[in-house]
Length: 335
Ligand code: TYM
Image (cartoon, rainbow, N blue to C red):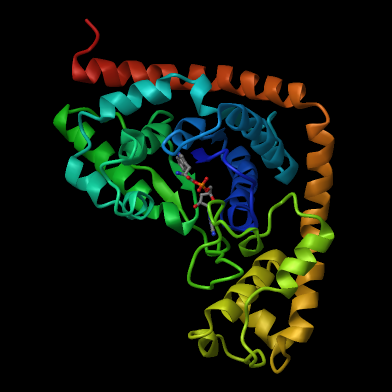
């Protein structure tokens, strides 16, 4: 069992990342240890350059995001934690896979279409090639499990297509097909302003998301102002089908309390948001407060976090080297 996943170090970690992905990463640490496997988690700083970056901010965000992951429970002594750019094999394998990935496959990626919008000609080629690098990220470590949120499903399916075509074209059995792990406990968290858009770092409205760095007051205020409707909460989940904002808050409550949405409704059926939102705010503050406190401690010594990343990169380079060599050999690049 080898668990691999990454996160872009742009902006702050938000509740969507935490409930949708990072909490699963933390759980996988135990599962991998029990199965005699290992976990590799990385800051996808090479992916970040697919959109314009401010160099000093990227460097600072990488350390801050690493500290946030540690504050959430990723233990650098048990998991290999590093930033992608310090393991050159990611870029090297991505280039090799560029011989396998097809233009048509990449053109169909919804994230490319969303991010490029109407200006495809003006985008960095890295934005188009982004999923090839992501395939390299997981294939480099011959990952068995890749815990991600729903929005990454298509990219992982592409990684499987690339792995299959590479193995077939070069007649090797090099890359196992990575399994996307989108657990039921990993909900899709939507914007607090629009229940049909995902909670995202790139949303211009800070009120749309809860950042893991938000104060207790900010968390409570954002939830109080979250868009909802005037109807009380129903007893049945089906009745929330056309109430995207209400459903999102119930989803968040269930994920934070680690219970099902049905159990949340059993507790709050008939009550309005005037009662539900403060209960949700209390729960969110109780969960995120301790993480924020640990993060503040860790950021008091950024050098120590950077040193942990470097130690992780050293370990990752060791794990990556044999796969890269085997891929080169398969293609005929090593004589
Ligand atoms: P990124 O940085 O956008 O998000 C990190 C993780 O958080 C999940 N996520 C969400 N889950 C639920 N609700 C939301 N609103 C929400 N927003 C984000 C994402 O699904 C993801 O799991 N391309 C990736 C990073 C990456 C990667 C990889 C992931 C690069 N290489 C290899 C897995 C394997 C990304 O931009 O995630």
